[in-house]
Image (cartoon, rainbow, N blue to C red; front, top):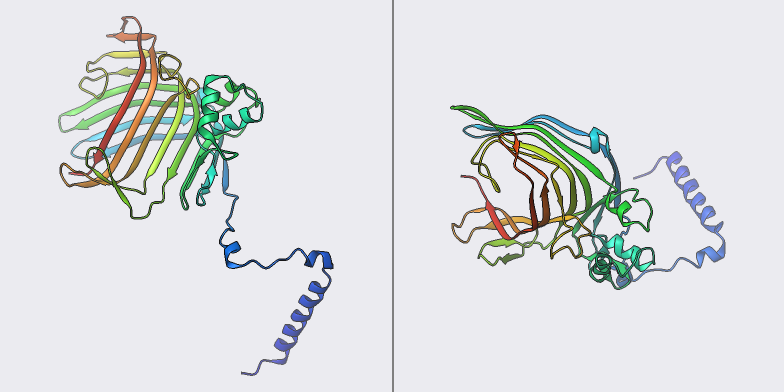
Length: 340
C-alpha cells in the first residue's frame, strides 16, 4: 500500500520532533533511566488507592419488605447530630498487594503513640501498639487482591487528644415508626426511634481467596472469599417506644419506652483495646448448611461487645427506674440465611 505524500511528511516531521525532544534532554537525566528485568517488574505495584471525603444527609420516606404481608420502616433519616449534615467522613479504598500493611481499626492511634504524640502507658494505647505494629508499619497485613475500605474522620483535631479522634464523626439516626401490615390489619412495632452518637474506626474488607472453602465449627461450609466487617461506635443518647409484644431479642412485652439510651464499653472486664466504644464484627460469605444442605448467605464469627445504659425505663408510660447491662456480649454466633 502506498501512503499519500502528506501522510508521509506528517510521519517524518513527527519522528524528527521526537528525536529533537529526546536529544534535548540533558545527559544526567538519561543516566536516570535504567531498564527493569522481569524480576524487578514483578515488584512494581500501584500504591495510591482512593480517598473519599464525604458530606451527606440521607432520608427515606418508606422502606417496605413485601411477602404475604409487609414490614414498613417509615420516615428514616441519617444525618449528623441534631439533623445537621453528616460530614467529616473519610473513606480510604485500597486493593492490597501480597503482605501489604494497610490502615485498620485503631492503627492510627498506634502510629501516633509510636511518634510520641500519645501516652504509651495508657492500657488501650499500649494494646493498639501491640496489635497494629507490623515491621515498622501500622495497620493489618492483607493478601494480594484483598479489597480494603477504612472509614474514619477526615479531621481528627488535636493529634495528642484521644477524645478528638474518637468523637470526630457524629451521627443521628431517626425513624418515625416500624409497622407491619397484612390481611388482619396493621400494627406499630416501634415508634419515635432516635439514636445519636459517634462512629469510630470502621473497616469493610473483601478477602480474595478465590474458590477456596473452609468448614466452620458447626459443620457449615463457607467460601474463603468473604466480606469482613469490623466497627467501633458509641451511642450517647437514644430513645424509642416499643409498641407491640412478641418482637425480637431483649424484652417480650408491649408499652415499653426507653430514654437516654447509651451504648459504650467503659465498664466491666472486656474494655481493653476498645477505647470506651462498643464493637461489632461479622463475616459474610456464600455458605452451605451442614444440617439441611441448603445454600445461602452465611453470617458467621459474629461478635458484639458493649455496656448498655437505660437511665429512663418506662412501662405503660410510667418510669420504673433504670436498667444497666455490663459486659453484654454476643459471641459464637452463626446464621445461614436462605429463601423458602
